[in-house]
Image 1 (tube, rainbow, N blue to C red):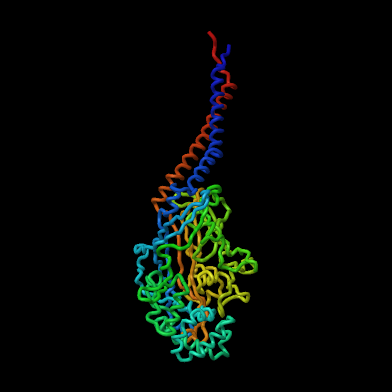
Image 2 (cartoon, rainbow, N blue to C red; image 1 turned 60 degrees about the horizontal axis):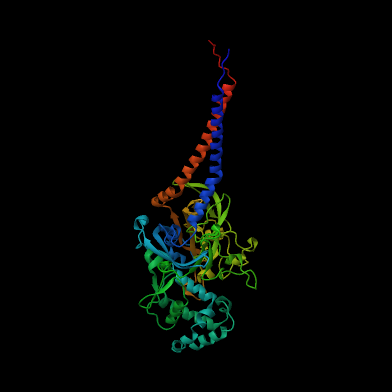
Length: 564
């Protein structure tokens, strides 16, 4: 007779197979539902700003300084430029600074969804990272403050002189030609005109310009050209001094410059003035920000809600005469120190930069890995400064504040340039570094530019789950037009060009300490959960399959054994 496998053995193989199926189902549920929901809630809790939380502490004081790199365009042929030659520039730098940010929190809103603060910024020169460059390097660079004054004078002669006409009376009465000057001021008091519109046939204005031309030496330290010989330290932070012991009209001009309130010009202890690009940024902040804490809507965390108690800017042109806010004046996004969590492939996000008075859209580019941390790369698009004008529905950026410069007939600048006059109260033009992507109308007039997308494009790498920036840099260049201004001798032979001054990179690269912290808090946890997920799913499925095969094998096989 035949003896078959016992029912008990078959029973237990089916139980083991069923348990394997349960483990696999549990692993799939955990990996695709339970764990993601747990992580999602944990991330939400960790990124929301709540008083006293770890995220709040990181918000108040960034855990590591930002990298602030400045590159200066040193002018190699200043004397030839004065006689009409095309400028030749040489990039020097980077001059590297550590930028420390600390927020002075004013208050939370009653429901805890908003937080208001003022941000203080401090710069420390990093000699090691800057080597071989030092702050004492001698440079020849565009005289920004003198060039700005002359162009503002050309554009707004009424505003410049009417504001201090009364204070000038006592000095003007001792100055030759005073009656002509006073008659001219009265003549232009009611109607604003540019210098070039009225200078040709107006002897009074001609005399006024002669006086201005004569006093440039006293105001700007007897300049020999439109370029200043100074040090990197003075040009960037300490200040290039001017208005040193001026007299007469020169003193009145200096007073007007001082009272104009330019952030880049500061009065010194001896009464003189000094221009620097970033000296005003080094210390206490003034702008009052209100940002979302993420409470109630984590996708809005750190998005700017108000700047100086207003939801929109009043810098650019508005959409209608009724004052409807244009797209140019809208405040969107964060300040780029962090981003909302749960980024998706193909999405976009905004940052707002107060330095250029506008919101900038960043577009998804690709997946990246930074020191073993996965993330997404975002970069600016053509709508930053290339696609500007009525054909792109953003003509509100075309403020048309510059006369006799290289621009389109509709008043907009050519592609790759943005007029920041209404933002900075100075005729500054924004481009990408080395005029990357800018129209040939500008690039052909400067020699020495070497645009490179890898070096000069703005980008940021973001950890997709938390919105934490891993690496990136905001890269922009500041320029001014050089041009001839009627009856101003120092400009009479200049060729009109868009002249580069400096370009900057403000960025971050997560350091080793922060990488280790990030991996410990998030990445290692995600890896562990992922291992548990796949181990349970694959292990359970494997056990179930093996047990089932064993059952089928035993069922289909008879075990023959002779009976005694």
